[in-house]
Amino acid sequence: MAKFGFRIRSKSSELAPVYVYTQLPGLGRQEVNVGLVVKRKYWDHNIQGLDSLSYEDQEANNKLKELKSFLLIQFNRTIQQGEDFDHNWLIYHVNLCFNRVTYNKENNICYQIEQYIESAPSRVVSAIGAVGLSKNTVNNYFYFLKIMDEYERFCDQKLTFDSLDLNRINHFKHYLLSVKAYSMNNAGLQLRLLKIVSREAERKGISVHPFTKHIQSFKQKKRDRYLQTLSFDDIKKIKELPKLPTPLENCKKWLLIGLYLGQRVSDLLCLNKEQIREGTYGIYVDVIQQKTGKSVTIGVVEPLIIYYLKKSLPYKISPQLFNRNIKLICQMAGIEDQVRGYGLCMDTKRRVLGIYPKWTLISSHDLRRSFATNYFGKIETPLLMHITGHTKESTFLTYIGANVNKDAYADAFMQAAAKL
Image (tube, helix red, strand yellow):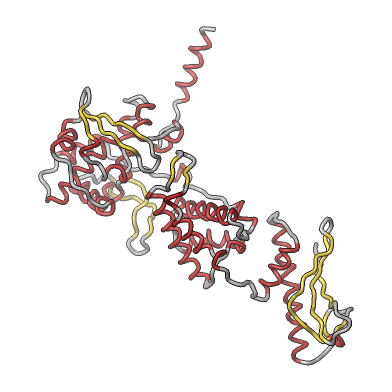
């Protein structure tokens, strides 16, 4: 256990600065000026404080006691967390105890998030070998900036990268999950973005707390996921709806097209006639997926969808309006099966696990999942993965909530082994 002591250096002046010191194996003596100046004649080396009853000297003694207690607590936390202890640690925590940690805009987390967003167009995305972050990724960082700004106001202080120790990260995690009641996936994403921005700040030479390297993201457990899809029977009900008012009819077209193309809403609602061409058995739809940059071609044979794409392409609408309207359309189609999932609580504006009519839980992203689920087992999995843009079968199966067919792998092995 570390021991902290105090001493003065000056022997010639009437006033002398106070230093705190400690000594640890392998580190040698570490000593820092605490920022207090005392009268040398009242300094008692035995009690490491001032032997004076004056108010000013007693105040100085109280500050030294407070500092010693603070350093012991912080040192024990540092050791328990497996972090480094050095001269800079001592300087930082002395200043922290006396509230002398100055605000530096460059070291501010929100400021660096803004800088990250501004550099989005020129950032290299190594995973796909492209330049420029996708629109969805940039939106994630804007949302992250909003959350961090709210968190600063919640803490009533500007947050810096060198303050991101274990306690701060745990407090931020508590804020996300308990105070704001965000979902596991949303909270996990914010921690992942915090780690990315911290790593970027460190590359710039900004002082970053070592614990940022140990920030862990997380996702909702597989057993806690409740996936919603529209079956072929549900799709039939939507198709059979009578003529709807123009805005809803337009949305119904997008809904049905999405159920047969299997694309993300960001790619679906941007479709235009230039992406549609005649195919061997139906029509081709060419898409460059915004999120991954992958180029895919989807074949369509469903007559109604071919008609929409060739003769009655719906006009563009916002994803927000689309999400609202598809729920109404599903309700009108009588898709009211009681299913378990996370529904929106109007009081808290957060999602709560419960039993709800299916139409209330359907969102735009469920169209892509419905496509993959409806054709899984009927169409070869690699073909479906090419259309949806998944590169790993395990990821694709998790996406639709299916399990790997282990028997198929075992059968393939036995067939090959029998021929040896």
